[in-house]
Length: 522
Picture (cartoon, rainbow, N blue to C red):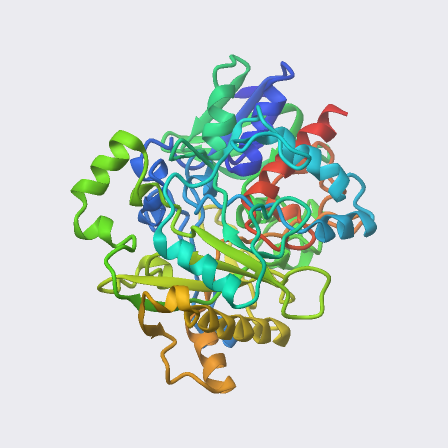
């Protein structure tokens, strides 16, 4: 039996930051990761991230059939590797609108307002543009501009401007609205995951032990206190004891799953599966929120999209190997922007532009060259849940996001798709566009747009909220991320977010790890 001051479950965005910060204090830390080391080249080459989908580095989850999405079971990739999903995402660095954080504070989550979080974002960051009032340098996470920007991407930005929208050179300062290039978590054209940024430098410390291939199966309890973690690997079952705390950082699916397997969750649900109830916490697994994206796609008349790297791979490979530039340095979602279509206090649609066809997560190949313009619902009203399928810790949980169960979500995506078509018709993009591949020019009525949204929308891979924090006793965790009703146990990942940020979620997930370390140190 192994022992440490702290046992962390999950080497994703939050877990990597937390392992770095805790081990820096001199405390002994064991980090358990179900996946393996990030040695696969596709975890390094930016444009290759979708090659990891449904590989051994992917948990490869699916939702239950979604009634509002034509009963489709939606694919959810999640990183099962050092770095977690930061080792297989599109590397877009977005923090979210300050209103979200200030609302968390107003709701009683002390320490989570914009004024609390901005220093944490800056502390973790190494901004390649240099320091400013909103950006830091010297942190582990390299944030940079793309090495190479596709001409189609520049045409999209110009088209957004022509359509009447402002340009925005920095979505992470005091203004989120507008369009422009996305900054990415890359270091000289190579992915800078949470493992690269924080975990690997920390692994040089003798007081940090990282165990891969170790899937946690249960939080061990002693006299009402979390005292360790049971985990399995190819050799069998093991227990690692925590003398101070156990911290779950498995993400919005795995953390609530492990809590419930450990007897912490809705009592009726656990009892029905034959799991002894340690603490009746009705909200474990509730409040599941995810960003939903719907893509318009267009064929183009010049062979300059990212498909060129597949048609003639030798030249792009050589350029990337020698210069770390060219098509393979692309994060695919090179640009985008934020618009407010409803009456809320912050943007509710985020556009992602790809100088490539990206249909059905890339599983649906389209011949020739094209572009994708994906309006993404980022102010989400629909709420779902995570449940256990059985008491078997290796069984996949039941995932039900209940997409579009709130009609406002559907309306916003429909309006976003109409706006995407408007961008494609502006002169800069129109000079490249041949035809509309999705949804097709025959789509003109609201009913047809609704059909397009229901039939083609997919997850943007940002599940949050299933161990939501709050000041009340029925919250899963308190504002210092301690699990209510159980001593010595915290959660430090995107599952603790009470609402979803209206932007890509890797940055806030890392900050959750940072805040957890701050609370522990205090």
